[in-house]
Image (tube, rainbow, N blue to C red; front, side, top):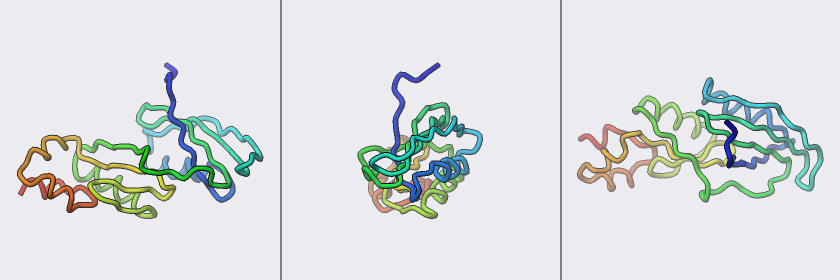
Length: 149
C-alpha cells in the first residue's frame, strides 16, 4: 500500500550524491532499510540533486540530497526510536553519535544533522519512578539502570 503522506528529508552532501546517505542508514538499520532507485535530478539552484524513496521499519520516506545546503535540519523534525532495552539503545546511540553529537534526555544528532531521540519502549514506566525527571535531565544517553536504583 502506498503511504498517503510521505515525509521528505532534505540532506546536503558535498557533491549532491545520495549514495553516502543511503549507505549510512543502511549500515545501522540493515534489513529494516530498503532503498528504491536513485533519481538523478541534475543541476538545480542548489547544485547537483538526487532523490530516492526509502523504507525504514516499514515507513516510507523520500530522501533528497543537494550539493548546496538549502535548509538546515533542526529540532522541528526528529525521529524517536523505541528500543527494547539498553543494548538496543547503545546500538543506535553509539552509531549516531560516533560522527554526530550527543544532546540531552536521549536526544542526539547524527552525522548529517538529523535529530533522533533514542528511548526505551517502557519509558512511561521508568518515568513513574521517584526522581525520574531529575535522572533524565542529567542524562545524555538514556541509561535504564539509573531509573531502577
